[in-house]
Image 1 (cartoon, rainbow, N blue to C red):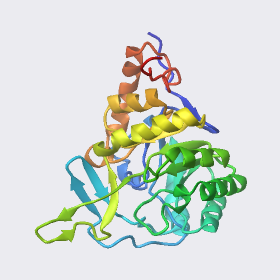
Image 2: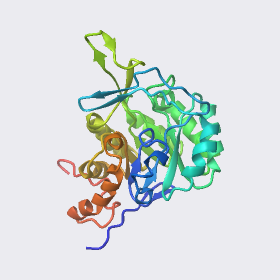
Image 3: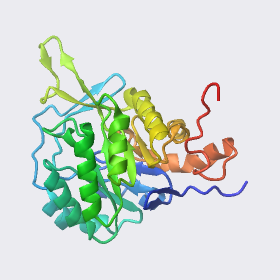
Length: 307
C-alpha cells in the first residue's frame, strides 16, 4: 500500500495534513511545546486576540457538563500589540502553519487587525471569529448575512493571506451565513463555534457561570456540528474546516466524509494534550480502510439514502 497523501488545500491555504488545533484550547502553543511535536500537525490556531486587551468575564468561566464543557472566558487576552510583541516572534518560528484568530468589536476593528497582521512573516492565514457567544456583539457578524458579507469582503480586500470565517451554530439557517461568507471571498469556512448553553446550581438557585450563559463544546455538540457541515457542504463549494467534539480518528473521518476538508481539535486538548498527533498517526490506517490513497479522495463522499 503506498504512503497516503495527507495534504489538503483550503482555497489559498495549503496544509501538510487536515489536523489543526482550535483557538482558545492550545494557548499560544508555547505551553504545549514539551508535549507536542508541532511539525506533525497541519496547523495551529493560538488563542483569539482582540485589538485592545480584554480582562475576560467574571468567574466562574468554565463548567464541566455530562457530555462537554461550558465556557465563558470572554476573549481574555492582552491585545494585538502585546500579541505581536510577545507571542508572534515565537509563533512565526514554528514548523507548521499558524493561523491567527481575531475578533473585533466593530467592522473597522476587524479590518484594521487583519491589515496589521497581513504582512507579518510566516502567517499562514487569518481566522475571523465572528461567532463568539460570550462577549457583547460577538456573533453580530456571524448572524446577519449582510454584515457577514460586508466584513469578509472588506477583510479580503485588505489582507494578502487566506481568510477563514468561523461561524456560529446559534442561527436559524447557517447556510445563509455560509453563502454570505463565500460571496465575500472567504477561503474556507470553520464550522462550528460553541453552542449557547447554561448550567445551574439548583441548591443555591444560581447560574454556575459568572456570565450566566456560555458556549458548550465537546462530544455533546458533535451531532450539531456534523449537521452544519453537511448542510453547508451541500450549498457551497468553499472548503470547510469541521469543529466540534472531535477526539478520535472516527470523529475525524466522520467530518471528512460529511464534507469537511480539515478539522480543528478543541476540548480534547484539555484532557489529552497529545491528541492531535495521535490523530495524525491514525489517519493513514483509516484511509486505507476505505481504499483511499489521499485525504482528498474521501472528502464529501457520504453515501446518501436512495442515491
